[in-house]
Image 1: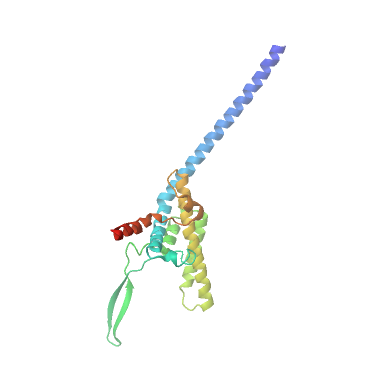
Image 2: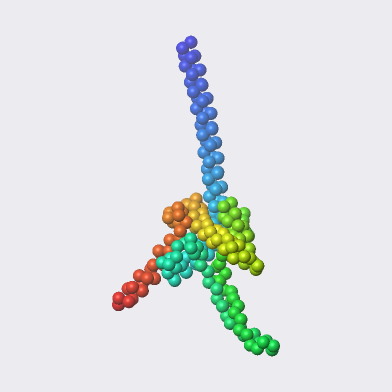
Length: 217
């Protein structure tokens, strides 16, 4: 009788252990599959959208460093810097004489601008986070109204404020989310950029160090 009791207990323990093992293996498999899917999706986001956005922001940050804007203005005051190349064209008008107008000459450098950020996010929105997409849509709306004729000074200032804050949020979010996705893909990322959304451009200080060394010689 006692032997039979132990046999029943042993069978129950074995059954419970089997159920727990099956459940645990299933949970591990699902968790692994979920992590692999997340990693794969993050890689697609980086490849299709975020690294391109990060490159555009990196040009803005180099301009900030190159011309010492960081010593005069905070990131919130001037969140994004872009370049406009201009060429002069002379237009002859028989009635009014000769006039000189300035037109923009597009290049790979001038293409890296705020509009490019927003257009890229909207074009590749399936790879964007919800936050980034919302910011892009809001920025496009505010920027469109900011450029309209016939606005009162108060209206223009209001849209200008929205535009400034939204481009600031766009830049911060792009830097943070790019580093987050690099982390999820087990790639090198910058912890400060991940946490604060401010690009680290210490790599550019090599230029100043080189200049200092050559001047000393």
